[in-house]
Image (cartoon, rainbow, N blue to C red):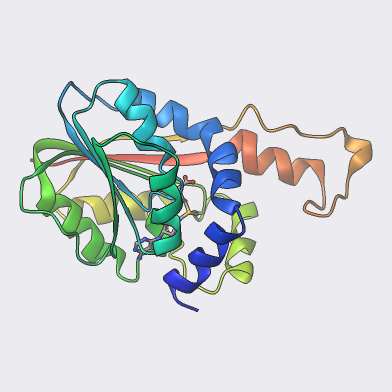
Length: 225
Ligand SMILES: C[S@@+](CC[C@H](N)C(=O)[O-])C[C@H]1O[C@@H](n2cnc3c(N)ncnc32)[C@H](O)[C@@H]1O
């Protein structure tokens, strides 16, 4: 199944708002760290419901672009805001429809690993960022987070499983400096008591704690020279 087919289905069944609720637990910490300033132009790669841009507009960015490969995601995101300074585009991570050196920051939550060619996507991000611009890349699916590996079985789009080090190396290969790398735990998701396990989703409480509290979201921050 293509990105479009897979995620159009998610959007029409309302999963975009469910993702927003879950991802917000850690995405809000990532967004809070972004050094955005008034009038900045920010791209959200794989925008889903577009919540990140709505939040960044409250901090005064001048323009937000939400790019998504699934037209139904982009359509839903458009319907959740009437803010004309935020625009939603259908496009692919392989070819970003922006001029060289045109964006101040790029954000991406739970989307980068769906890129068909992640090295090319990083080069594209490097190309569109202004000097000193940043890429805040947040992923829950990564090698050290072993409980996340099973996700690939439920999704028809091929996913890239990199280690923390592979993220840093790939950023550098694409010409980005690595300014920061950090695992942000999800402290808000409710973890039931030991007696509730196994659940439909988790074999043991330990595995759930490991997934959310220990590994959480991997944030890698790249800076364009
Ligand atoms: C798991 S969702 C995350 C959405 C949102 N960032 C969030 O935190 O809830 C991943 C999104 O990336 C989009 N996506 C995946 N691969 C893509 C690609 N190659 N090009 C453009 N969008 C893509 C999907 O359509 C989907 O909306």
